[in-house]
Image (cartoon, rainbow, N blue to C red; front, side, top):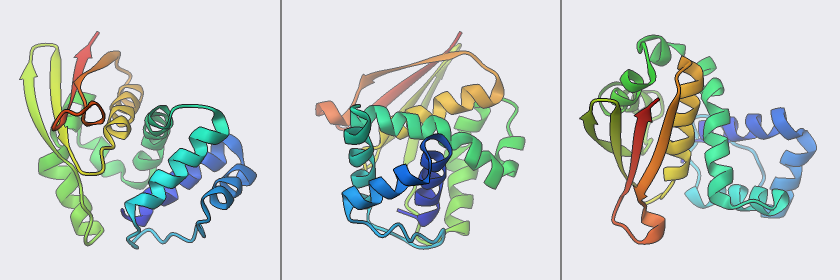
Length: 177
């Protein structure tokens, strides 16, 4: 996983809980916390940080990952405003993931492995098929909820299938309210 993700996770934790909490997570995981944005780091390190945060807050790791996604969206907007400014709404942004945003991410961060989404569009809903060996569908769900906040929209997300429950891929069904 690219270091920029670790940098954003650190910023979110420090902004909400302080530097001592970030240091406690690093101590609990035995990680150094020295992440450069262009560096690549094992996925297991972000998983360890999420699990440590879950233990520290007495929450489910999936809930922590979702929260990180929601809180990370403003940080991503600060870093990459052009991605957000090119879309008028959350739906347009989501539909640009495979064709615009992830190809640009790969240009910026050599070796980045981005998930690929399959979309099914219907009036009022958008189904995102998510498949990735990382199984971070909860982060994707958090990003979608963060996009709703960013664009001032009301939406609901359901997940009729999930890799964590044995499905071959996850489905996130986004409904605009």
